[in-house]
Length: 191
Image (cartoon, rainbow, N blue to C red; front, side):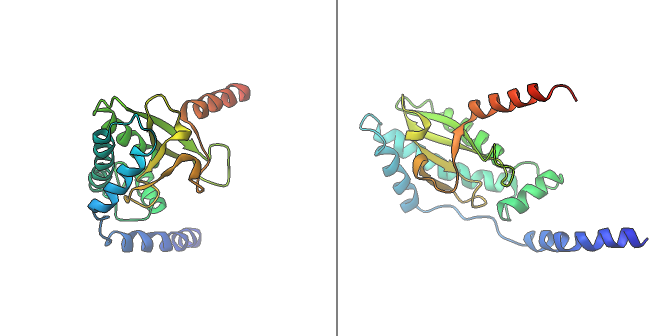
């Protein structure tokens, strides 16, 4: 009985945080100024970018973030929400869910002057959790010449930055990270 109480006392702070977080409101929809600023930044990537596509991509990035935050039941900071997803209390909302859903939504637009990329950060840093995102760039440009679209970072509020200027994360191409993981598993051999 004493052992069980000790474990329960460790869980109480987490349960209290989850209970308080359940009362929080979901993130609000961004304003037109936010959407216009992102559209300007996308247009500035290249003179070949169709301004209408840049405007549409910016609007979709913000509206999709808003819709996904409702769909995922976002009411908490990202790491608390991750805990809820991993505990089965929420269906989705891990960073890779956001990245996958954002990429899929933008890809449905069939942009002719924009390209989409997936990236991962912290895959080789055992002290930080791995993080995934979607990046938009001019067609033909690489992800490092694009803009990170990160709705997870601030819990359902879109964060965006030029990839090279994003000081919070060192982004690598998703495919490169997945290949490196596969090679590490192969070197370790079967369990």
